[in-house]
Image (cartoon, rainbow, N blue to C red; front, top):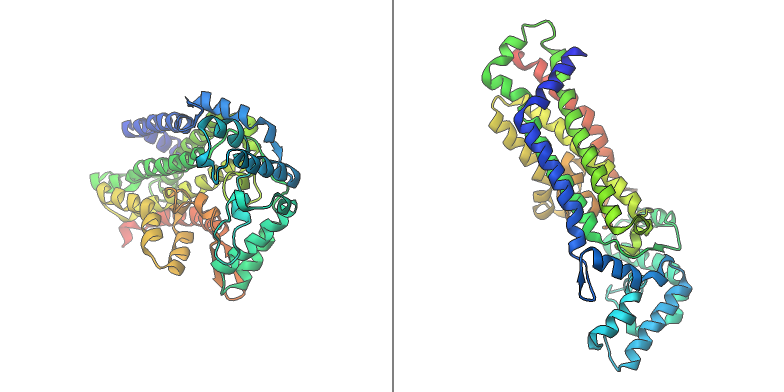
Length: 407
């Protein structure tokens, strides 16, 4: 235990570690505030615009019942009819703000759900009969089935699994105005930045001692092999994991306080796709992203520890660690679809690798790992893989360190 304490103290006394920890805190504060600056309503910006939007859409807050949707769509169409406009673009600005904006939040998924089942092209809100919305949630299930036939046409198991997952989604949805998807995007970006910082902290854990020759002396000491290796790996995992946890908790508290804690009771289907497979509120999604992000970061740090134990120079270890962090992005844009899905499920940093390749946008998609009659939703595969890779890579790093001189 004393060796672990000394290693922990050594990491925390390093100037670069403190610089990165302070930078992490500053990035957390900045990224939690920035999404509020993107909101513009009725000539207002920032928090004033958030408050104005919440006032305008207050009457539609709560359960998204079919009756509420019918009333909202009828009022939407009546406004267009009064002004002889085919789209909201033909309305005066003040009319759009007073009469259309209060309805857009609750009508978020209607055009998507009532799209053409063969082409996926929406009919547009002016062309949907409000009476059709009486069966809105049945239409959601039908829309999901149509999507899965297009996305997974050769995989009936994936279609069945998607339907099973969606059956667990609580309906009617809930909508509370004010929160926006930019805040979730910035949470993802923060996780990616913190993972890069963690790689910088972890990369020298073994390689710096190889490079300076200090390792030759340390191995001659009483606790110089397995105990020291385990202490080094455990200390860097603790520092990086604790920093990530604190920053993510701080981000969620600040973000939700700025937008309003009632807003995060919104169903994720009212923020993203109406047929999203996750049965979560926005707050639950935030916590899920923080939890899976922590697993992904720790697995990435475990991989970095392994690389540091195998590579003799700090610069090379750092370069390899940073490349492993951004690798999912390259895989997402360059690898063939089937191979890319498997690779993304296995790369430790996939859970926090930017936006498009990361966990959040993977949850918005309908990608499955298909093996015969078995189908596994990609986000579940990514989360399970990182949970297994964390102890695997950490143990491999310690083992490589112990065996270093025996090669």
